[in-house]
Image (cartoon, rainbow, N blue to C red; front, side):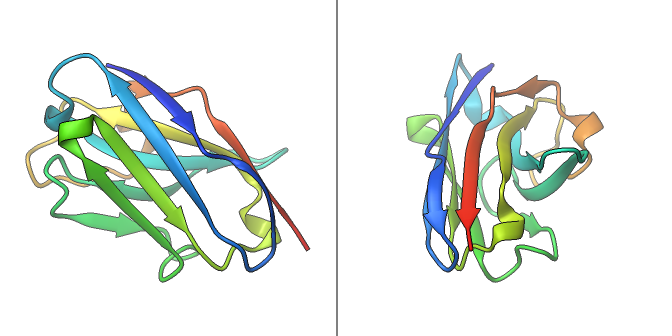
Length: 126
């Protein structure tokens, strides 16, 4: 599956953004999907993950209560709704898909994902 992330931009601290990740190819519902991010000079870190059907989600502690991951399998799209953004949320955000995940699995280790989008930049100004 090929992934295309979009929705990034410049926002003031406290603001909101919604990222989208559109998948091309069949059987999107067969993939667990996730968002990761990478700030300048740092490694790629886990943000949130969602199971194949959307019933299970896990969040990084740093975004819990502020970000919401969701997906619409009919539209082959995953979302990340971000509220109360902070300057430390500034990063390139990547979507990823894991085709070997079980139905209820929520993978969170980047090594489990074989499909990656190109990334979308989120910049939060103070």
